[in-house]
Length: 448
Image 1 (cartoon, rainbow, N blue to C red):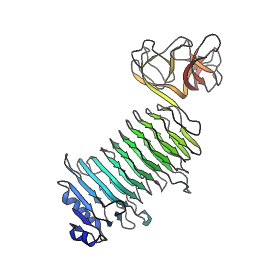
Image 2 (tube, one colour):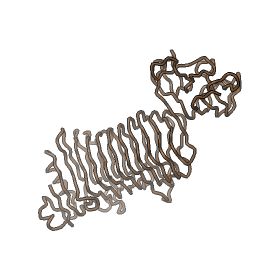
Image 3 (cartoon, rainbow, N blue to C red):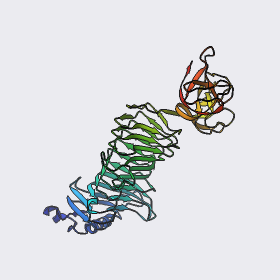
Image 4 (cartoon, rainbow, N blue to C red):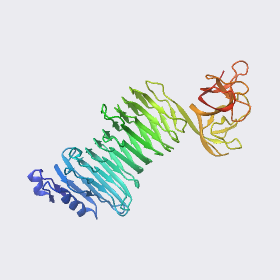
């Protein structure tokens, strides 16, 4: 099906199945979509501008067949835009039962926010009862949205957003929920212009977010801009992205929630007020081999102990590093957070235990969480902690002292440099003269 715009060439209009008149063009586009929705197929929009006064409803297929493919003549050549002061979303996929396979490609969605339009550019939702699955958004330009640029619902999987631009949105440029999504080679810029949300919000599992640019508003006069927020994404890959130009904001990237199995590796953070904020309670994941440059306040703002491994990052300011390893507790009892652990002498794998040997050569780190006997859990082996168990009642611990294992299982003491050849695994960042927990920096174990 071919739909021609009012300003399409006469030869295109002459061969089109539907011809728009520049008013309520959503009617003709919707008729074309409805005509192919049962068997699936392509609706081809001509070059030109299509002006809508109501939402265009997309349709997939209930099985493995072909859904609707809405295609344009190219970015900037085909433009869909709402009327002034409208509040409708421009494109929406919201089925009443589970649907699959919708494609959008090769056109521009202009939200007309400059003329008080307030809807989302693209809205995908399960509000009407059906799950939405397997969508491809390719080579699309979403701009000037009065709401969210691209808004993906909770119950969704298998979305591919490739070679797209979403920018100048009152709300987020992209909200991504669900699972098994792939986003690559996209440009997300100037989101959250109304200063009430994140420029980009990701609350999805098993995603690949690779080779994208997330760009801020720069010297916008109002404070409070937020960049990208990753909230509880698991088993995901965030790699090769560029986060830049969040001058007046709080951070370019915020990480929070459970991130088990997620690798945030090889990204760059340039020219931001703050680079990355890692929230207290962030669980699991790897943050490594990222580069920081020209961030004015801090590269990594780390709120406290978590279970995110942070190491091998490069910046022009001091960087917090924290390395956690998943290991098996073979101590014969439960480990509590802050307990000193050693490698098991005859380990069958990544096994740890406790020791009552002062200065034990096999000291390895501390439990970062409660770990039942024979269970797997996180062991902090490098980086800062606020919860290391120590005993300074025998020999007082001063700031800067090396720490080693003691004769009390799970507890560290001041390492003795002369004669004992103690294996130090941490440096005290607070003094202690009693049995307590302190701030400490865990280091590669070394003889002193």
